[in-house]
Length: 370
Image (cartoon, rainbow, N blue to C red):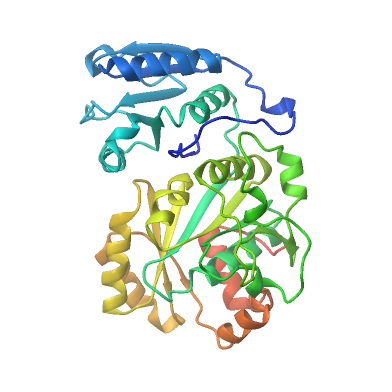
């Protein structure tokens, strides 16, 4: 099942659109492990609103039946460790008074999401109502620079371009509101379509078809960008971001996210990714910075990208070994990348053979682009 982060601060849900294909085909079976009376009552109320069947136990010894078969496993913040060889919990439940300690506990338990109550009750109800559906949606892959200036945006654009060229329904998401607007690197035209600020007031489920149709497209690649403007813009809160990511999953087979290298990026979009690729240069200082970045990421699958010419392949292997990450690929260090980024022509470089080879290796693509 794909990860979906329940973020603090979410309240009322306004459902947009009426897509019958999103209606759960079976009632979600939910297992809750907690001895906290408040969390038990909140979960009971939320599960009832979602139409799910909740089974509550106070200790893991009583959770043998249903742990591996439940659609969703919830654990309370009173749980401090998991028994061996157990599937990681889907959601960690806690109260708003616990603050950042919930995120640290989630990382130690391997929980895929954090639900801060009571603020996140509506989102959790929607999540549970969708958990009986057989199709979790597309795959989300995050690209993040292990250090400043690594070139994560370039790599994300090229990977999305290659996947789209092979006929994979792919969305590229700009995950850095302070990055100046990913769209400026993709086109020098003012392309029609919605940007992040247009989703600032969004809550709940966004119609998948309407979402995909509303986005700008450059070089055959649909994308969601922060606008390339100096003007102040509305910033979607965590609830809006969650709604957008869910819509992206339902609309596309692959979602490539250019994740900001800051606490907001680590604690929001990174949690929605099935896999995170860290990008670094083959240099000692860069490798150390990448190791520090890796320590900030949520638990989950990760891989390493190294930026450099083919001659740096040996260094890339050594860096991957030192970071204990699989080497997913070497990003070609082409001439003219900076100029192409400034002029909106980065997609032109993405058609060059070194780039297509790199992307095919990372994405496990076969054959020629469509």
